Length: 265
Image (cartoon, rainbow, N blue to C red; front, side, top):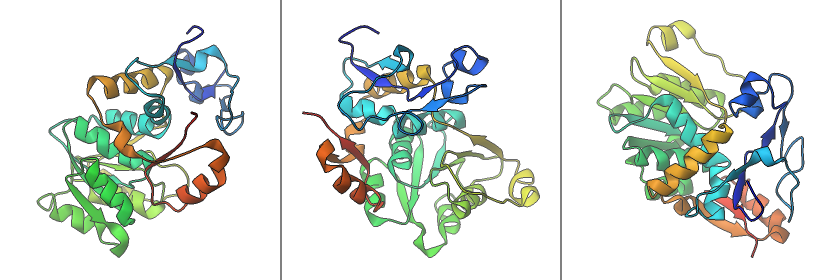
């Protein structure tokens, strides 16, 4: 990159020399990694000092708001769907319609899939419809697995994606998917138990874990948004100035929004 380039940040650094760093997965550095916004200073400031290697040039047609989404939750969802090999032949159920899961809904539709969006928050289910979900399931009654089967001829979808990290929801993602199906876990945290034989082995499932994306993967999702005209702006539901940070976080932690951004005029 050079002075004046518009860039997104891949918010990790590693040793730069191990096999994971060399392929752009610095968050998987075999020796040590830093996370900007956690172990290093984050972006809630006017300026951020970071290594050039973390800066990914943006396509000219990508806005900074779209770039912010790509560089976090939207990029995470995109690469989880790639792990699942989603195409127009698939029906996918996406559990959780926060910024990551809603991005999954948007991208899966752009890839041609039939999408079933699952959540317990009416506002987020409405957003999922706007982003292209073919069907929505309110899981607040605890019967999401049966509801998904009713939408898939009693068999279940070809693939499921969990963006919640909640133990019961991870089990629902495994139980809902059809025989020979694919499951991807992208939601972080918590301990989860499975009854491996009936839930996984006897269903012949393929299960993936997906952790964000590489430096090259960040450039890839940005290009996809531009080249496929993905309406990523529809994901963004609120915008705040930095001096409104407390209000922004109070709203976001209420778990009713889509993507919430800080903007600089």
